[in-house]
Length: 336
Image: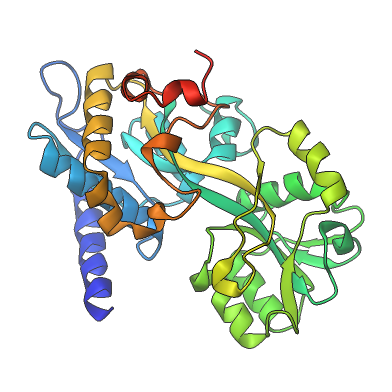
């Protein structure tokens, strides 16, 4: 464990140096594609940076004409989409609802042009989780309570507002507290608020573990379920989300149902079909090496070639489409 932390800390330091020293446009190859590709993740302690660095390692090892770097990405999904659009990086991790907002120039993306941002592949699944005081069993039970939903304008708050509105919960009838997840989690652990509403990966011990260590799950606090009688209508009205049934096994809730959405990797549409095809092929032909560094992607509902073309509300890069069609996975989800 100590070696692993030291390894990723070293990678983070190297990546920050590369990001600062390398020109944003990178060096161009003879066909106009850059010979240096930069993939943006998130903070150095999270999975997204590790995944971006892992992609860089696998691609550099398997494509002799490319050098691919994974770097820290400030602003997480929103920041990554904006950097891809500006040509500062060639690829970056994203939440699907942020990608949709960018393509519609809404929410945090009202200013700017995002037409060059494309989906490279669907990767994992994020879950909209509400954890609350015992006795708050369904989303509807949140009415009149105090809930932490994220910093205003961060994206966390927009997600919570969007989902909870489908269950009749909004700032007119419930006290929304616009604080970050760290502060929100601490407030729930200390009994200062009734609930938190944030998106997490499954079995997220890093974020949720401290809450359940401070307040026993099933006794003091617990996961809150979406109302069954409202969920079908909500999902029919918003194609971004779907019902997840794989639960939270790490916390003793394997049957928990929840509202879920995809995350993925975005890529610059200005890259040629050929280079994106070759990068996509190199990754999936060496997917066992990818899973060695990101074993969480082997879990049900996470990342695989079979699910890589599953996003239907945002356009893919033609190079990725070519590979997915070649492997017979495109037509499982797409109509064209």
